[in-house]
Image (cartoon, rainbow, N blue to C red):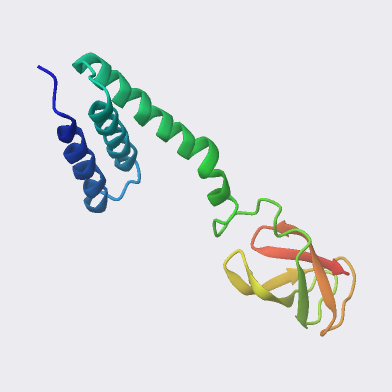
Length: 146
């Protein structure tokens, strides 16, 4: 006995709705896989084995696509990561900085979640100068003149 096509549709919707209760962002892919099987079972007469294999392959393909293709863009925007995207950002020095002294730099848009950062520099730079982020050293930004 083969399951009807609408069993897969109802099961897929139930799995997608289960994602609202268990926010793991993983169950949704199995729900979408079930929707794919439901649509294919509606169009073609598939055996139970073919339906299960199709559901498994569709779900795994969607999980793979999520991790390999779509999630790549989210890694770049996470707060607290220093992927090198901060390097080269231009900011305005609020407090002057000198070797072995800390200063403060302000950015137009938040950098790593904050718009003001304590900074260090190898040379003396007066307040009001534009500076560029050279590196990240612990919880400080190392800056230099632009």
